[in-house]
Length: 292
Image (cartoon, rainbow, N blue to C red; front, side, top):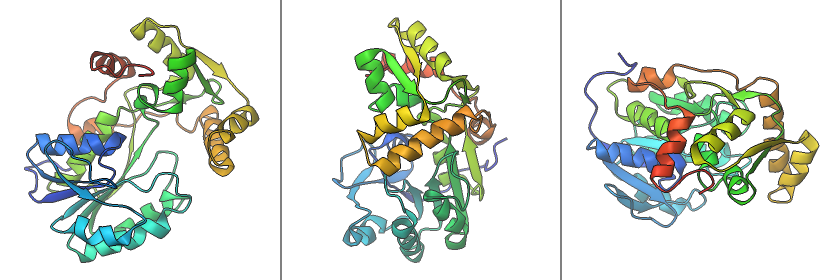
């Protein structure tokens, strides 16, 4: 029995970030289940089974039209914004006034309610909506199979670099995140809580490298860096403040902050969370394997 079992609700869901890692999968799963979906993005990119609409966090002129007719909302905050609350909260209040009654916010396992960045949005979400959920996934398994920095270094060098040491992470499949999002959006009862989402086990980056080597047949190694080495390496690729934050997150992993497994995925979806080997094999079969 899942936490919001029973026949799904009807209505239209507006999915923000509809071409992103979790947004695209959420659109696909909602559409496959027969739900009406509006797929929002800056370019109104067509998404199978969904109505494409233009939406730009920083262009308020796009907001009302994107919300028209929607009663549910999947919220992916603007990527890289150091203060997303300043942009997201006014939009959420507009959404509520426009008739949206349920909102599901994508946050992260590393960000607690009231914490920095999206943690502020998390803290205020229940004040805006009576029906809500906050998804706090652990690090994505797709970081090793798509366009992430790790995937690129695996593809070009056969190396993944971190400052995590022997720390372990409950890596989670983005398909599982989307499955929880779809259930939270359409179930008769909203979760009205935050949900930390993990895979079925914790893995260190040495384990990740070994599994990638085994499944893909291509050697992959984990190279440990110091916090300063990682920070400086990342600072050459992105703003220094963001680079320091990412390096700090690796230190938190090294200290055990992500060494946990939760039951949120099986409890919400009614099936086990997907393991990393299965994800790599699945994405290899679809032409999106490690580093692809």
